[in-house]
Image (cartoon, rainbow, N blue to C red):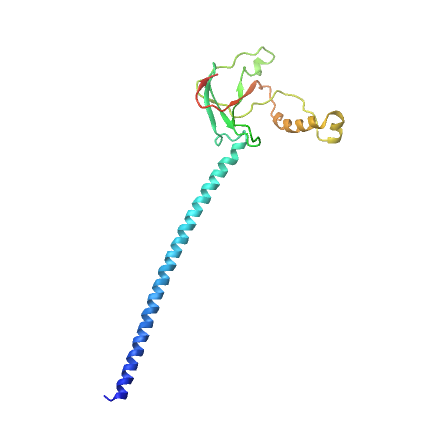
Length: 201
């Protein structure tokens, strides 16, 4: 084999070697990118799953807390200690004083019966003590108020001729609580500082 053919053969071998190297390099690069993409996808997927779990948890917590402000949401409010009365045990709710910076939460026992309902055969008769109960009575909603005629404050100009502005503002806050009226209205609301243990009332 002459020198020219030998050098041509060596050049072709080197060229093939370089092509093979480039091919191997490309394969390695592709595998590396696939692996990185897989890692990235896994990381993104895990990141998304974690974020979804966190968002779901936050939504659950927010939905629970959003219900704690009203009197009507029985299941979501914080419960008070159980207190004993001569008629039976009571459990109320803990009301936060969020709008008042320096006030601590209070225990509220709302709609506690203090006499038999003055309805039916008891109408116009002297009241009697309520019948005792065995289970713990949940008292977390205000009872109805006695029937009464509510003032009409729809026309502010006319109302302000009859009363000061402060009284009008007070009535605006009070009237929504007076909408639920009934002859069965002998209930009281008890508020006390939050305490931890059961006790006798």
